[in-house]
Length: 72
Image 1 (cartoon, rainbow, N blue to C red):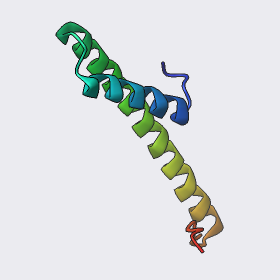
Image 2 (cartoon, one colour; image 1 turned 90 degrees about the vertical axis):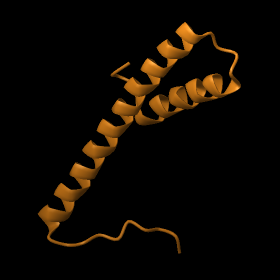
Image 3 (cartoon, rainbow, N blue to C red; image 1 turned 45 degrees about the vertical axis):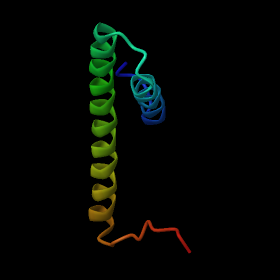
Image 4 (tube, one colour; image 1 turned 60 degrees about the horizontal axis):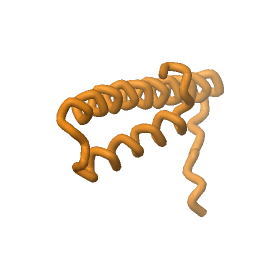
């Protein structure tokens, strides 16, 4: 599961959430799905932190603050 992209991890997480929200999952299966979801959350969080660190490094190397807001 570690080799998934952020988008793949997020998609799988959404699938699990939808399955659990449906409520037709036996308890043992729900627990397993919840464990998988927590692993996916960790993967997403790690990837976001890595991206944030990369952006911060780019900003530090350039000495400039870059506005990534493209909502014009």
